[in-house]
Length: 192
Ligand SMILES: C[S@@+](CC[C@H](N)C(=O)[O-])C[C@H]1O[C@@H](n2cnc3c(N)ncnc32)[C@H](O)[C@@H]1O
Image (cartoon, rainbow, N blue to C red; front, side, top):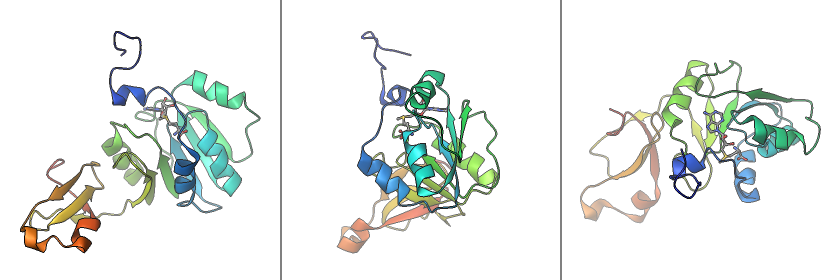
């Protein structure tokens, strides 16, 4: 849907408009990958990240729903060996097994929880994304995280639903270390 200006009306809609990230973001994501891995790139845009991951030595399955965006990427050079492109809606397309990691560079993704469910169902161990904090890139282990605890003061980030927050408590207990640490949790107040 578009606003009166003809432009997307919300950040979530902007994420459906392909726009490239900076090299810094791509470098951060590549740093979480290793040569020889099989990667699922969800919402791959014009394949510029996927091409970089292949150059690193990964085999990449790139899923993108906008044919025109993929075509513009293909127009920039032949697809390298090791890059498979799927034109599909990643919400419906069945994820393959045998993945070493998934990459979700989609800052305003509204389907984080769905993708985590689908990746866990096929045994994918790692999600590299900027969708949870909407800032830099993080590598999230998809193994079950510690259950959320309401009595644990500090930052938390939910692996299951992507919600992030700060559990309040006695200010005297909020040390610098507490303020800087983020705990990956499962079953936070937003997803219970
Ligand atoms: C912000 S762009 C980022 C593109 C790419 N990940 C990059 O970093 O260069 C997000 C892309 O995700 C695609 N996308 C969004 N939802 C999708 C879905 N459900 N299935 C497939 N692609 C999707 C959009 O079409 C858009 O090209």
